[in-house]
Length: 206
Image (cartoon, rainbow, N blue to C red; front, side, top):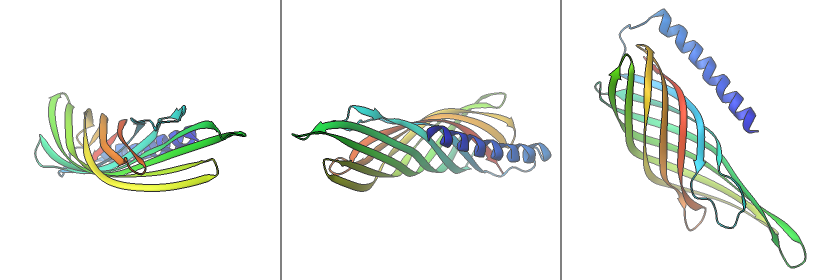
């Protein structure tokens, strides 16, 4: 399942970058606006493993799409949608007469808004940092010992990170970054966790 998700994500990103590259080569440096869009694929990690589960897969393939406005060469603002994949855990419990399997899973989505500070280095290469807020949604499912439970919690937490970009041409760049989303979920119901997301992608300036 993960390999299919990775293959689909890479194919979509490759098709998009091919289209963007053809546009960039056809009309390089023609009146770029301060607006940009992009997409990234990478690995997400569920930082706080649920207690009582021995077999946990706390990583998955995630992706994000984003758009931004470059106020000046150093400062900008960026909006992002994240799909951070699915995290699973399982165990076995003895109920007095038999060993019973227990299964749990969690899925994370988020919408973020952040300020971005960019520092050009040289020859199209720059580094950046971002700080903002994200609206997070955590859905959990659990089953075992004759029960099934489905819960969903939304909340707001900090979203911050840093990364680097390299501009091949004025309106096309490759981007790599690390981000953290804080306070995803709720301790009283779904449980709460921080999320890490390491990704690479393509940014296109209009």
